[in-house]
Image (cartoon, rainbow, N blue to C red; front, side, top):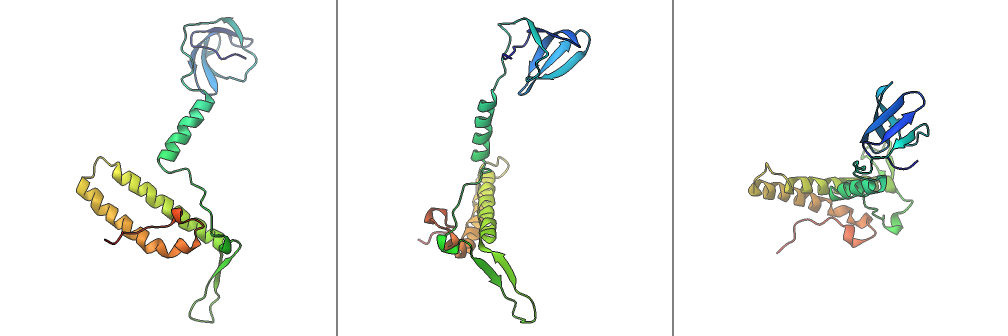
Length: 177
């Protein structure tokens, strides 16, 4: 079925004549003479167009356009995780944590699992940085002070750079002058 505009007159076998009042992403809101306000999915084949309103408002965004907008916003706020490759020599590896007390069992963790946690930590620090920098309630001095703690956290995490395949993904702490 063609895309309907607001104000288009339609007919439904059960609800009678109606007028499209809203064009949502997946459904139309229609006021029917026998059913009142109803939401009918855009896939519904029971609607017959009686009179098209050419001047009616179209849906503001198509699904494809909406996907682009959502992807842009998620990427802007670092919610979309970048694919960060694990160093090849570590693939399939295992990390053992052996307690000093030999009577206790060691903990075995797949390196991929550990690496994923490190990357998530890095991504969350980046989002924290963005939120701090875009905060309207923090003064510039407060932003700088908090940012210094984040930089120190990055510095503490440089030990894990050995796991990354590419240097561009490394943790970087404060640069020495």
